[in-house]
Structures are given as structure tokens and as C-alpha cells.
Length: 318
Ligand SMILES: [Zn+2]
Image (cartoon, rainbow, N blue to C red):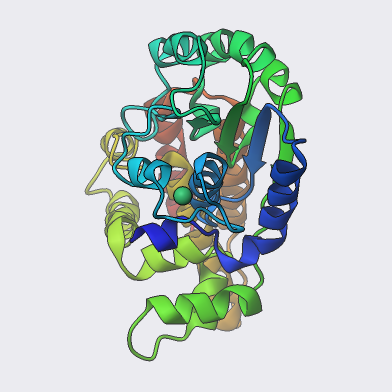
């Protein structure tokens, strides 16, 4: 991805982009923004592009990509931009990284303009890190902008949430995202059905046909069959799905889609889907709610119950 592509948001977020650009021009940008929306719709790209716009010396509706600031950002070495992410995907953000922000915010920005702190995903802030962030959120200092990116804003502590201006980034319609997706894929892919399968999340659609998710889902499918046949016991399956190679939210979503497809296929054959399958479907909905509500959930324990229930559902005719 070149710098030009990094400096503008995806077309389906143009209205939200104009809204922020207007605030920046008017000098009424809040200290802290919370960009919320579904996963895989381009929130992080939006956040990075806006950080570039704020820091760019010669912006024209988006960062110029040529000035000293833009070149420093592209090289990952702009002294007034800090990106905070977990060291490992799915893990919490280290509290040390948040504590170091106070030093970052001391004094004046190096390049004389803004200072930008980008936190992604913000739900990876545990309670201690969130509390440590409060001080920075309350007194960030002059010309300092915090951008928090989250697809689960409900998991942020209310104290953090209430100190941010919420901006919802919408999930595009199939018509909005279709042309872009087509431009990313070679050959005659049916982008419309691909987008529907991906829940209209364009970046997820890309992952479904290429990338890591395709492999993850194949392995999940193998596990579903192995647990049903009894060749893998629920505890073994739980150890695999709770490992760092699996995103619990993604995996639960895939399993839900899988069970829903099984129900539909049974109905299409003119048969009545077994009760056990509906029970398992409800069970997955509960597991997803618990996963979203509880950041400290023991994933292996939770997965152990899910796989056990899947085994029971199969035994009961699911
Ligand atoms: Zn620039």
C-alpha cells in the first residue's frame, strides 16, 4: 500500500471524513475521538489517514504525502505521532505504554504542530491501562489529539468513553463497497455474494478469499468435524481455538454462520432441523455476548464448554 492510499479513507467513509476535516479547519477538534464501527470496515485506515491529515504541513482535504511530516509518518518515525497497540493480537495493551504517554505529552510538539496518539484496538485497554489513560484524556496538553479505535466500544470503561467524542463509522451497503472490492480482486469474482457472506464488511470479504482467515476457517471446519466424530475431544479442540492463532470473536462468528447454514440446508431438504441444533445456536449467541462483555474471560474454559455442547448437539441428532 503506498502513501497515497494510506492518506484517504475508504469511499464509504467520505461523509465522516468531511465532518472531521471541517472541525479541524474550524479549530474545534475535540481532544479525544472514539472511532467505533464493525470490524474490517476500514476504521484503522481512517484513523491513520486522519492522523496524517492533522500532522501534514500542506493538507488539501487529505495529507499531501510529500511534506517533511508526511515523509516522517510514512517512515514510521514522526516524533509527534505515537501508535499504541497490543504487542500480540488479542492481548491487552501494556500499562507501561500508557504511562509513557505522559512523557510524550510533556513539553511542546517537536514539529511545532499537533501531537497525535492513536490507540487500536481501544478495547484492549484493561482496567489499569484505562485508568492510567484518564490523566492524559483529562489534560492532554495543547494541540494534542487522541484517537481511539474500537469495534467493541461497550468494552471500554465508561470513564474513558465519556471523555471521547464518539464518531460512528458505518458498515457500507453492498452497492457502496462493491466497486471497491471488484477493483481489489482479479478475475470474475461475484463481489455481491462475497460481500453478503462477509456481512458487508469489505476487508473481511478480502480475507475470506485470501489471507489468514481463509486458513483459520478451514482449520475450524476440520475441528467441527473431528469433534462431531469424536476423533478430537472437546478439551483438545478448546486448546487449539483458545491459542493465539485464533480470534475468539471471529471463530464464534464463523461457527454461528456454520450452524445457521446447516439449519438452512436441513430445511431446504424438506426436513425439520433437530432441536439440539437450535439449542447450540442459542449457546453460541450466549458465548458471543460473554466474549464481548468480559475482557478477562478464560478463553480455554469458555471454548471447552462450547465444544462440549457441540458434541452433545451432534449426539442429540444435530
Ligand atoms: Zn504532508
